[in-house]
Length: 275
Image (cartoon, rainbow, N blue to C red; front, top):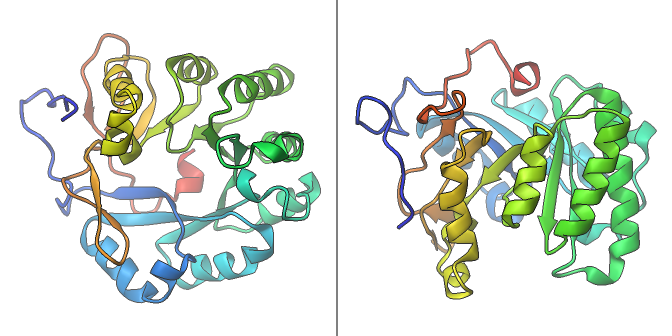
């Protein structure tokens, strides 16, 4: 089991403690497994301490339905973009269109976008074009870019770095499973890494332990801006994936310092206003 560092007083925070305000920064509430029972799904999440959720639109033609979820449930916000695995099948996003969506008060991010050469390497060119359009929209709006990266480290590092040299922007490297080089580049640009349960999946450990090792590496980096870590394996319940152990939330508190639990967000502050 990957090591989890204790907080200064030697005790772990209880993820279900009602005093904690947890944010699920990346979910897909429109997916059939969740949409079929959405009121109960949101009720269970709220009871578990998840006070806010960001549901992600991966195909822009579905944006009206995802927006409707965010408008229906006060604890739900949303982001929208074209997922790289869908880039060849969907109309190309436009900067103007994404900027227009961002005017909605519950819209908090651009994406999910990025590059996926593992499953859809045949559409590299259109994925790269789509990614650059999403980056431009993030630069224009000031909202964070949500990046999906799989087996495309060199190209995504180049594109993100070149765009940062032109105009700064915010970015979350969602469900990070790439190598330390891309992690270092992302952190140097001030991005946030989301290290999920993928890093502890048994199938990945059988493939050399690269991701498990990276999870240990990332926790040890004093400059690592890690927004949330779920290092425990998940199990299939027949309904959806659920962690088999608590999820520990951590944030950096300065170079050379130890980790502390993530600070709660005041009730009046939305994910959009918190940056």
